[in-house]
Image 1 (cartoon, rainbow, N blue to C red):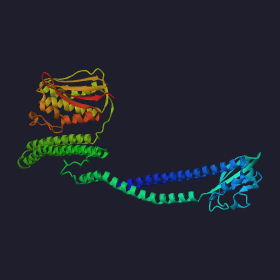
Image 2: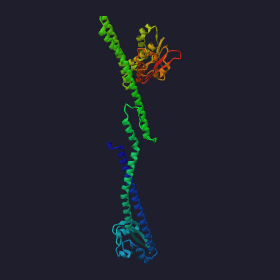
Image 3: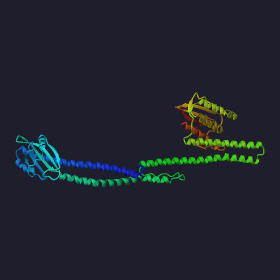
Image 4: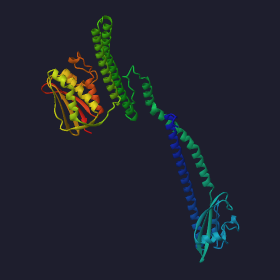
Length: 452
């Protein structure tokens, strides 16, 4: 069933439901019509029986022969023991009730259907009821044919058996056409989706005019295509930028090796060339590691080794790592005590993020660098503040994008991945990264992490 096209499945379901409804309606109409006809016949028998009982009560049985002789019916008056007191001439002396039935009718009336009744063709409806005359109890028996009722039921049954399938066929055809019209926008969207390729990512699916479920589905798919287009553009930019960043160290590495091969004549010159090549290889390795971190972050697969981390230990290690470098540049690194704060996180990744923030402050900032941690509303913030020129205003909105660098830093040694990695690590910890310029001078860059 799952392999059947949706249009046929919808039509089949509609046909089954309509068949059930038509069958139920036909059964109801037939049963109701049959009951109404039977009620009319029963009422006619009761009226006829009442007339005969009135004659018995008034001792005027001489007129009973006329009343008893209706067309396609008969009447008899019996004694409680089943003997005939008066009867329709066509019945002769044949009593229509057995002595037991006559005794039962003397106690209370009943109606029954007989297949064979003398003087009536086919089925007949028979009424037996008590009547009183001359101080005695008699039994009045009247009957009427069911031929007219049965003929009407046969005609109705024929109409239902012929008209029902015709109506079902017309309804199924209408359902097939309506379902096809309803699914036409889906087919249009399918054809357009099949034609969309990476070469034309700006294409969108056609939307039906009616604002219904299909239109909302098309809008959702178009939004998804928009996100895919943006992601594809980011990936293209990422590849272009990565190629650009890799080309420079590779070219320098090749140059160093060629110079060493052609012009190095002493062991010292050869060692210097090899040392320079090793430095470029280290740069390439660091760049490859950064790209790997970003790729895993984009896929949601950046592995974290979570454990309870004392923020004071994290910042203390950071101060020791940069102590010599900061002192050598004539600047200072101030770490404000975090007062025993702890956080669930990956210490290696958090250390990598803070290292990138301090490295960014050293390269592009000025004056003392302050690292402080604070908490509030169940979150921990770790700020790195410097006193340099700050970020260009138009750069703040894209500070954490990959390969994004301020104009004054493009000539430096940075790759533009440091802050992007900071944001990736913060997101992996279900947090976020932020950057702002201070009111006075300098930049404030921080990560915001949940405490638990």
